[in-house]
Length: 184
Ligand SMILES: C[S@@+](CC[C@H](N)C(=O)[O-])C[C@H]1O[C@@H](n2cnc3c(N)ncnc32)[C@H](O)[C@@H]1O
Image (cartoon, rainbow, N blue to C red; front, top):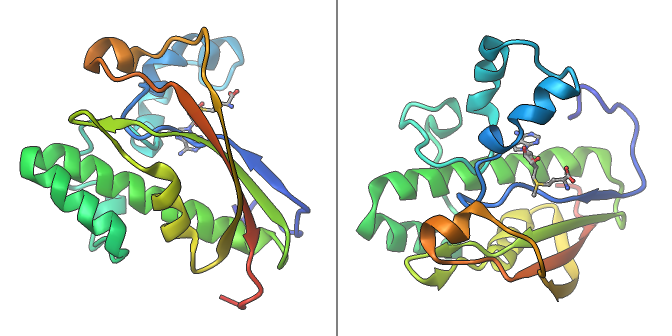
């Protein structure tokens, strides 16, 4: 992000990928061709490793090299998930690594006090809701403080995750972060 956006911006509003809930790579196939963002299957496939929130991340993925989750709450979740599925724990670690990078990059382009607004859902693991809000607040903490939190019910929207796992995302949360004034 630092490479492309060279001046500070006033605010960021984004809706990051869910963790293992939607297969964006498959879902966006039509749009990618239609908008001319890719022109061949090979081009599309080359983007696949960069997708955030995917399932079945290979152990050798570049984001995972030497990456250990240091944040205590996220570590608890990683261990809990690993008890039932090593693969799913790897996917979680990848998601954590990617989102940590997202916040670090945003910190470069936002001045102290500027808002970064994230719309997120809480996906589920074995029937339990993964508390994405708390996990994001923790991983963003070196650069951002969570200033406000809202939620709204998700209505009339269908997600493939609910069909496969019987666990629908029925709320979305709006996290209003502010860039801290800590020089980090
Ligand atoms: C929750 S959706 C938000 C969709 C958006 N609000 C819209 O209306 O198009 C998350 C989006 O992030 C995209 N995404 C996944 N990995 C990404 C990455 N590494 N860089 C940028 N976008 C990514 C997904 O393809 C998906 O479109």
